[in-house]
Image 1: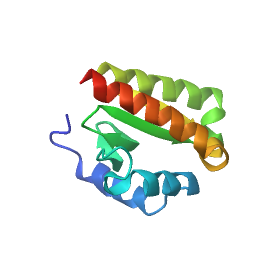
Image 2 (image 1 turned 90 degrees about the vertical axis):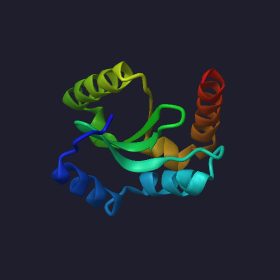
Image 3 (image 1 turned 45 degrees about the vertical axis):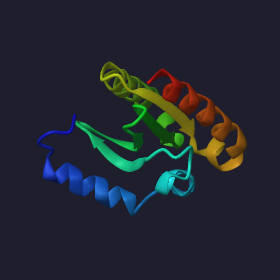
Image 4 (image 1 turned 180 degrees about the vertical axis):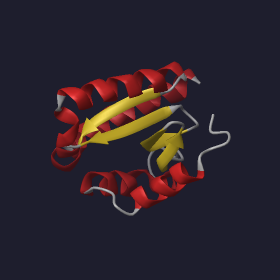
Length: 123
């Protein structure tokens, strides 16, 4: 899927790991090192031409955490196109708002658990 990646895109993805939002940092603490359902997640992973927040190859899952900038009409349209592209690759895309990650973590994790369970069972 990621053959012949643009080196600049990889550098940008790496730099994004160092400028993560509070919500992204919290999610990474939950997902890293197979802590969540023994699944391996990558953060700021390149799926050309995009960089996704979190990716699990084993179950084909992309997790995106969205801040307020994603609420504009242009951003919603861009995110919809991006999701359509990723889904065309056979990936499942989940989007959570940063404020839900930070304020309703139990709800986010319950939903994520259910989706991951379903994806594991279907593979």
